[in-house]
Image 1 (cartoon, helix red, strand yellow):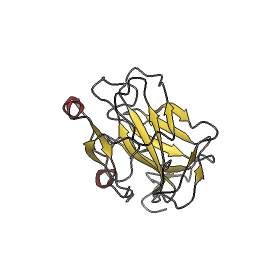
Image 2 (cartoon, rainbow, N blue to C red; image 1 turned 90 degrees about the vertical axis):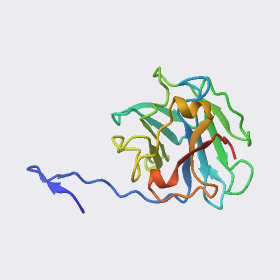
Image 3 (cartoon, rainbow, N blue to C red; image 1 turned 180 degrees about the vertical axis):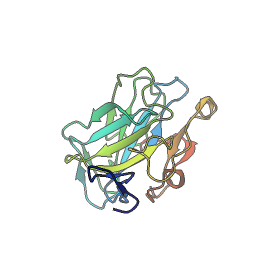
Length: 192
């Protein structure tokens, strides 16, 4: 257990589990706000594998700036992501005030979150498989350790709203397990 210190109970404190680079599903793009305000949001998941993948029952967890789970979106039954490079390789989860367009409409799932802010600008997002194992995550603040991998991605702002931006991976959906390296603010590109 590298980096941990044993306490009086023999438990290790200060140890973070080393993230694993995802070879299946990644959080590919997140927009926490947009031209229509805080609920103009979406999350795009991407199948990185060379095989179709049934993600029915997978969970997308939304974290507050304090690292607390505020909402969980359960992927509906029958949601299959096609292999990388094929139509249907993405699922796009769209908030109630989503204002963008979606290139590949094969898997579009609307959601409504319980908090007034929706996906917090300084929060984070993870995707868990059926066993509850975190497959991937992105945080927009270093305080959100449950979602963060490496350094946090740059959060969106009122300025980026006017530019129609989102936090997006590069064209290859590279996953180095460092959010600051993997994500950058780019023009929204849901489903592509």
